[in-house]
Image 1 (tube, rainbow, N blue to C red):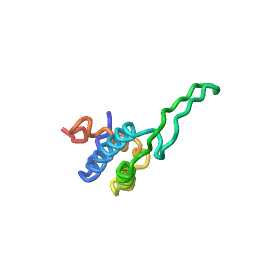
Image 2 (image 1 turned 120 degrees about the horizontal axis):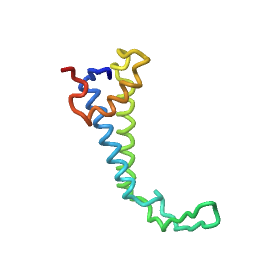
Image 3 (image 1 turned 60 degrees about the vertical axis):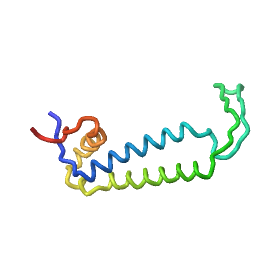
Image 4 (image 1 turned 90 degrees about the horizontal axis):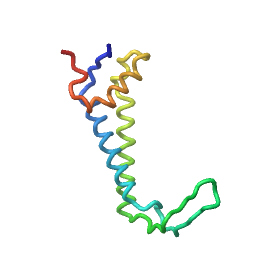
Length: 115
């Protein structure tokens, strides 16, 4: 039987925001050009796999600022979640299990509640 954990609401909220920030950052990076700075395209067919990139106009100052803002927030949230006082209450041998359950707590609401 899986061990239920009573995650504090601020820890759950921090983890959920971390998921959201990472998803937003990932989506933004997929939309942006492959290079931050303007670069010419290239094609390398001589290696063990073919690599091609179109010319990149680079990122605008606003795009760079948005990426930096999201990365900074992601870092803050990761530190908050991983250093939360809750982890000191969990037996060391159960921390990995608890951490994995927290990461998925948003998928099944009420998972940590006991009937």
